[in-house]
Length: 91
Image 1: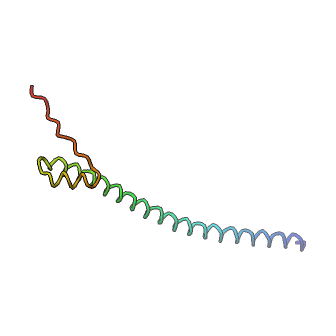
Image 2: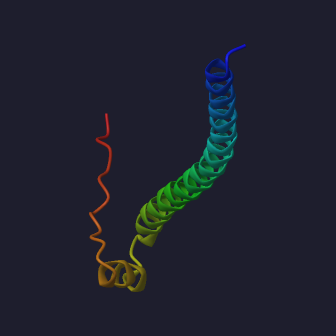
Image 3: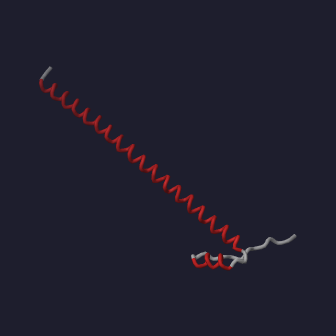
């Protein structure tokens, strides 16, 4: 084997080793980022659930307020407007 061919093959082998190590490093980094994305998605989902729960709670509180002026004042002070309950038409 000619020395020039030998050096070319050694260089290609070294390049292959570097590329393999790069793939392993990128895979590890990708797994770390994927875990962070999943954690962030769980946090966002919990926030959306809490917001929905809060909205339902305020709606239920407004419906239950009825003639209780203190509850109506509490909701009004926090920026919620209470609509008078609409009664269903009697047949």
